[in-house]
Length: 252
Ligand code: SF4
Ligand code: FES
Image (cartoon, rainbow, N blue to C red):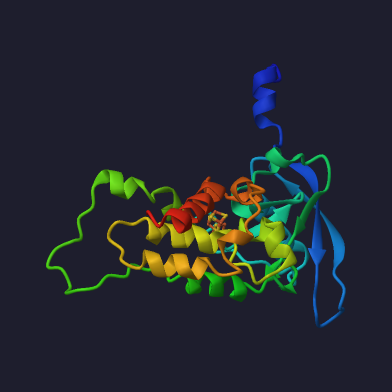
């Protein structure tokens, strides 16, 4: 019986999709050393997989001590923001094939927040700034008997800033925040914007006063790093500009 021969298309279809990739990861363990070091890991991975899949392979198969945050693995929880090849990204939304797997892929913690271990930073200052802008609906008067109505145009006014997942990619890409962690940072301003421009909310003036502080919106130098870094495509710099304008005109 003749040996079956695969044509080129069939041969391509059965070829292994896996390639060998080097992950160069910034490691820090305060129990072992005061200094962070780079460590290389070589893994087999399908280029259509994500950086988060690579980190899982390393943690599960090569070094269980590798420490990073992740939860949903689908771009919703915002817990796996990290610097990948020098740029803030979500590891779960970054495909290997999109970041030149022929060179080592560098993975570091986001900047401007204290590193606790490996890729895990202390998010408390970030969340404190978020809490400071009162990111919840504030109203006066009696509880309504039905939902608070709003026109589609009024809803549209703050639609963009509702998309924030609090990943901190914007704030930790901001040079002002790197130099002075006191600055509220883009994410807090985005979340203030979400309520300042909500026609149902009654605490816009209060939030504007909070952001009129020396560590508030006026520290923004409009570098657009935050807009470039946002994995949700939020126009962060535009939102900051709108808050600045509202502070000057008191119209929102
Ligand atoms: S504005 Fe974008 S980058 Fe900033 S915290 Fe929200 S989702 Fe992340
Ligand atoms: S793990 Fe939830 S956003 Fe990436």
